Amino acid sequence: MTHTMRALLAGGAMIAMAASANAADQLSYAGGWPPNSGPTGALENYAKSVEANSGGDLTMKVYPLSLLSFAESNAGLRDGLADLSTILTPYFSAEFPTLNMISEFSTLMELDGLSGERSSLAFAGAVSEYVLLNCPACQKEVAAQNQVYMGAGSTTSYALQCVVPVTSPADLKGKRIRAGGAYWARWAEAMGAVPVSISINETFEALSQGVLDCTASNPAELVNFSFIDVVKYVYTGLPGGQFTVPTMMNLDRWQGLSSADKAALMKSNARLAAEMTWVYFEEANKGMADSRTRGIEVAPASPELVAMNQTFIEEDLNVIVKSYREKFGVEIGDQAIAGMRELATRWTKLIEGVETVDQLADLYWTEIYSKIDVDSYGM
Image (cartoon, rainbow, N blue to C red):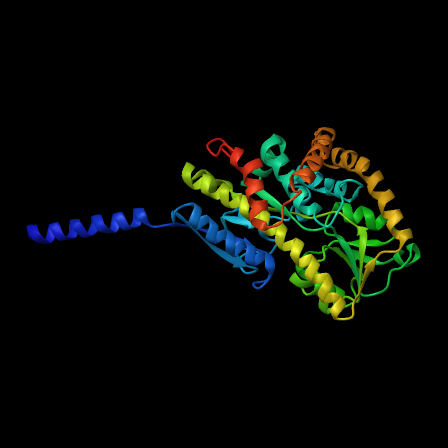
């Protein structure tokens, strides 16, 4: 081999190495929503935000309802089949008892002084602040699944969406109601109904085939999962409660990132939490409006049912702490509910005047995500 040939080969190798070193690191996000849904759109925007905030060092490919379903997400993310995913923690009650307990405190937002159609904006801020900045037990629980918590959005308050009319307490008796978490299961049982535990991806078929009479779901799912094509009645004011929508990242993948890339992700996480919450807020309103247009009955639940619901919520807040202590050994319940009450009040005030998703993202960043030490978080 000539000296010239060796020089050319060496130069080519150096160019290849430089190109490899400068290549963007692509992350994968497994989403459980259909491709054209609002939440998937929020994930696509998240991918763009990650690339922009990292200066192109990171890119992201979103896999909507293809790489992992919601039911598969925890094991798949733990085992590295995806780098990030939305983990609906109530699907994994034994793995995430502390997070689930804290999420159930969303019923605080149904009580006087905290309720309102924009209460989900406040709860997403409260739960993210508590878990990210004030809950070592939460971090330990997530790390046990080889994951790291990236923050959360929130749905709007749950409504009862039915294929049969439910206008009185007697009508609820024996009804089969999809319950996506422990709170809604307890609520159904207290009302004399039968809670059915199935994933959100299976709910449309169950409603259409008569397996379910109703689903306790947030109104955005009328659009996101096409419940609008099968339900005939939507009752607001019960059962209440909001569903936390957290993003998790594979722990090994997180720990392998540079400090700069971690900081870029955190900036984008604030945006994702805001956009996911905003999407659910807007789509809940759209779902209700479109339902009315289609002739679906959309109305507040009867005063008798609403009164029963308020009484149940107030009593159930005392049950949550005891239940998680007895079933899962969660010992921070009293501390957590006190902290969440304080944060719910704080965030209800903070969101006053927030009129756009950009303002909400800036608020989440300033009050929560900018305060995270990325060099120690998740390490």
